[in-house]
Length: 128
Image (cartoon, rainbow, N blue to C red; front, side, top):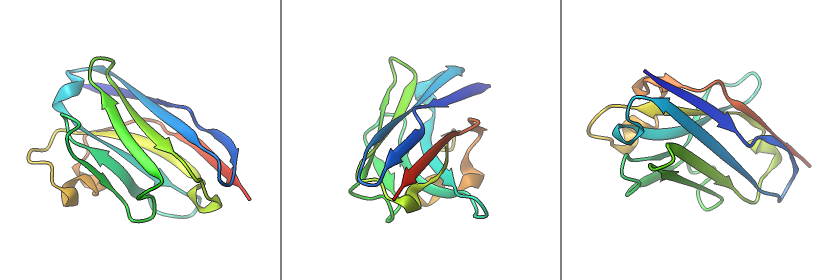
């Protein structure tokens, strides 16, 4: 069992930055690939970014590529999402998730179905 706790959300103006954190407790954090997803009101949950267990490979949705950076610190059991140049369309609840599947391909890590554990989410609101 893995418990995930997101933090760092808030209200920011367009063009601003936020850094989300996801702290994990429970079974070995380093065994899991980690992902960030987001869900806007009335829309399906969508993939934003993912990182392999070692941190050696990262994947991004086209909509956030070049603006968001995912990273992890296995010593701290924490994964981060640095979000720069935020846009109003980035407004959503952001969720982190843990994936035990091996191998961790981009296709797998972009799918909500591949994740075993989810946090409760943190709200990000970007004003225009």
